[in-house]
Image 1 (cartoon, rainbow, N blue to C red):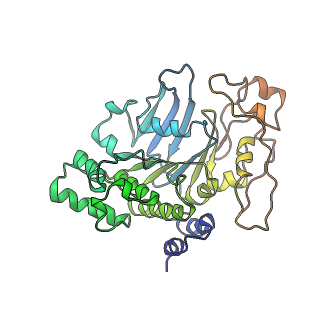
Image 2: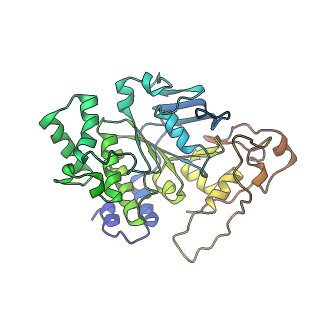
Image 3: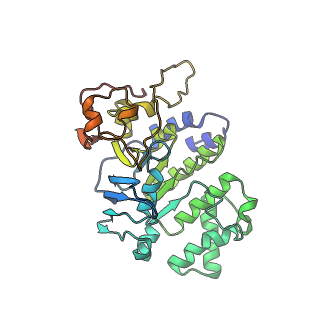
Length: 353
């Protein structure tokens, strides 16, 4: 029985513990390569607002790898996903895919651009038309991108359903007849119907039961391995991030505050905010007890941010410089970027293997 079968057929076990095996054997960090997608100095705001919700964000997605974007609610994670997919045009900056600059607006992107960058939404219920069958929901992108109709489209729909382990009969069902996990699988099939190269997954398992999450995560890993897909994985659950993703970008109030490989970030965080986030990661061994890093106060208001470092009102390492001067994002060690004045001097607590 393969690792994947062990997780699926033992749904009551702790799924993050099961993912340890998946990570160690199937998802080791890969050598770096030229990015397939680059977000360069992007700033964005929503219509009708007078403040930026993303502020000068730069991230790269190497082909075939998974980049996690983490942070508290309101940090800008989902906004970054919307900018990449063209749902929210940035006010400044640019997005480059496979060496060519993409139109900031969704309407300006070519059919190939739309097909190759797809999104899996957090709430599958709201992302599907309740009056359409599963076959129609998956079949629409097949018709739009490839002109498939009739029997050819139905055949391809069934192939996609088989791939997500939903056999015959599901094509004629409506969303109301599906479980939460099945709806999310349909969302995944729809995203892959156009032969996507980059998939933006906006918290795709947060609304699912724990026993179903491992199954969906396994499916995403299988598809990535088979098609050499690149994922941008928006998440709250750092246990999932640790065993699923190659690299992590930490955001706070619309800014990128730390970026590193998953291994280095978990073992040796260099930003106090990252340290606080990691201290909340549950330990699978109940005998292991760690002290949570205190994180007092509220997330800064993006409309009225504090002076200097946005995190300084909540930071236990704050000094006078932090309140007056905004820190730049610097490369502290090779391929480890941090926005903190004290990044080189502090020794922060990570998560041991």
